[in-house]
Length: 89
Image (cartoon, rainbow, N blue to C red; front, side):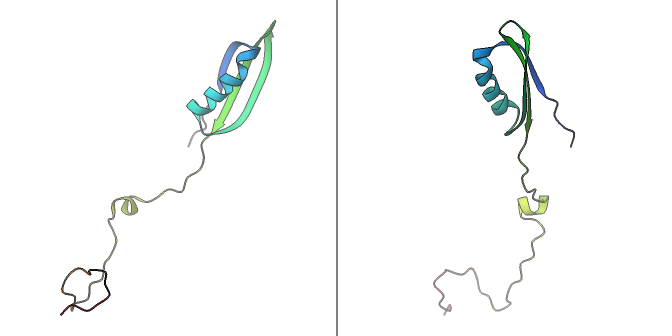
């Protein structure tokens, strides 16, 4: 999977930087990987936000839709089990 490029915001006042980082993480990714802040001109800054998705275990298509599962049935079985544990009469 290709890496997502860093989100760069330009000419942000100092007091807005925490909100921009929070918004960047919530919009562009789940985990914050890197934040770089550098001064562009007097009291304005450029910020670079790199985020990273959290790895999740992937499930195959057969596991998602229930295909591919083999169910062995007893030939003596007369129907669905009612859950009581008693034998049908």
